Length: 265
Image (cartoon, rainbow, N blue to C red; front, side, top):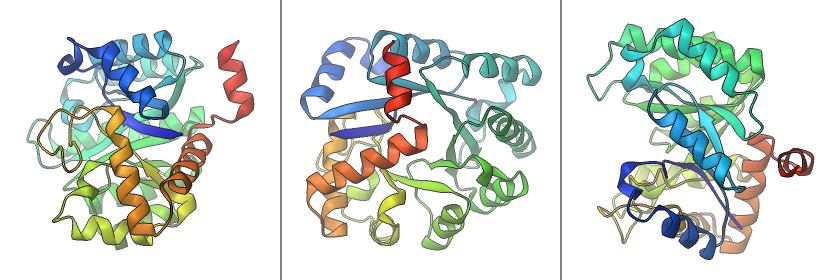
């Protein structure tokens, strides 16, 4: 069974057919989805999805492009309260984004550091957004001792050297649609080198649809195409990739049998 470790199914892009999208994911063999609430608007909608669907879990945090809008003390306290919910499995997506000029770098870094500290207090893994900020992301993760909780490098786009540094800090490396693109030489090379016990799959739906659907609206069912690409790159069967990446995701998010049974109750 497939595990989509990163989706935004609460996006308005799904308002007209959300139930159908979720049904298609199940039909495609997706057994578990982690939806990401990343600001004041999407955290409540993510929580609503997680409470409605038994197989959808939530990660909550503050996205770096929205860092300037965060009321630090108040919103950190809100995230902390939500992390007590049995369906909240991670803090994220958090990190640094130097591509979009919406929040000053120094503000992003403060918000990032504070959320790493919160995750360590709560013993929650973190989901990292990193765009054009590889050096500073690695530096802040190291300075804040993020290896204590580890987590996921979401939709990884960096070099093998950056991936290796993140692996050394107890992070999983997650790949989405871009690894299927024909010109994706570096992501394919990095995926090939990532140890099998540290590999994850995702969609980032509705964004970054995989080949041959590039440019269309992405959805969780399409994680199957990412699994196909990973299987080809690793020289393994699709079934083996599904099994390994699902086990990795459950380990990362603490969704073992004990955790699952407590949620079902």
